Amino acid sequence: MGFFDIFTEEIAIDLGTANTLIIHRDKVVVDAPSIVAINRSSNKIIAVGQEARQMHGKTHENIKTIRPLKDGVIADFEASEHMIREMIKSIPALKKRIFPPSLKMVICIPSGITEVEKRAVRDSAEHANAKEVFLIYEPMAAAIGIGVDVLEPKGNMIIDIGGGTTEIAVLALGGIVCDKSIKVAGDVFTNDIIYYMRSQHNLYVGERTAELIKIEVGAALDDLTSPPEDYKVQGRDLLTGKPKEISVTYTEIARALEKSILRIEDAIMETLANTPPELAADIYNSGIYMAGGGSMLRGLDKRISMKTDLPVYVAEDPLRAVVRGTGIALKNIEKYRALLER
Image (cartoon, rainbow, N blue to C red; front, side, top):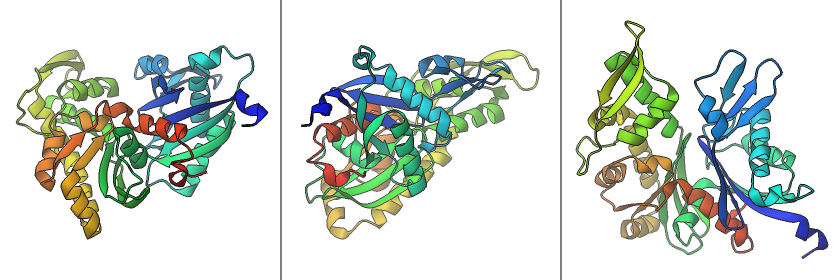
């Protein structure tokens, strides 16, 4: 350990399309929406995270809110860099430091990412004062976070449904044997709900309202054992222009999400079809693991189980499974070095 190592802080980041989570000293210290609010006239960033989310969809012409990450990758370089920097600054232990510490970071990335997109993540981290940057693929981080031993010679299948992408991967011996990354996930579900409300109820709802509908009555099956209560939705009537309220049921939302869920099912079946036979035998015995916010959709695990004829297990606290795994990889960097990219 060098003398300057005492000035280095280690952090693990799950840079998500919908939420960014940061682990520092084995604790999740930042869990904030990946949104930035910008003043159009001065081009200055005025809010990040939760504060910016409250402005989302409610701004006037001088303020715009943007989500710097799209489909799991950086779409707006400057805004994402500023967002990472502000979120790191908000870590309680780092606020007390007189000088900003140099950082050692492990950041998770989608498995379908290109070299250019990897470079964008690395550059953003380096501009936020990172001395060392390691990258880990999301399905691998999710598996570690769930508690799967990814280094043993045994096949495990992971489905990570995030905000921008659904990552499906078969892992063995610390590597990804076959994987599929599709841009159908939480954001697409939200857009499906907005479209359904417009076409079926003539009601125009915003992104935040659609997100709430998804959380309150979102479902993948129209026959649930413990169904949620109907949810009251307020929006603008497209015919009269007046604000109005309607009630929606979980069966309606299951209908609205049907096409997107079918695309996820197809991707899962395609990945299983490409799996080597020995690993397929392992998956038959161990089942499929699910993580990410999208896996919390009511009945989705049951539906995937019916489609694949395999047991499906949802991680406990699926929203944090990926960042937990990233944190474990950071803590045991020598053990997992083969999985990390520099």
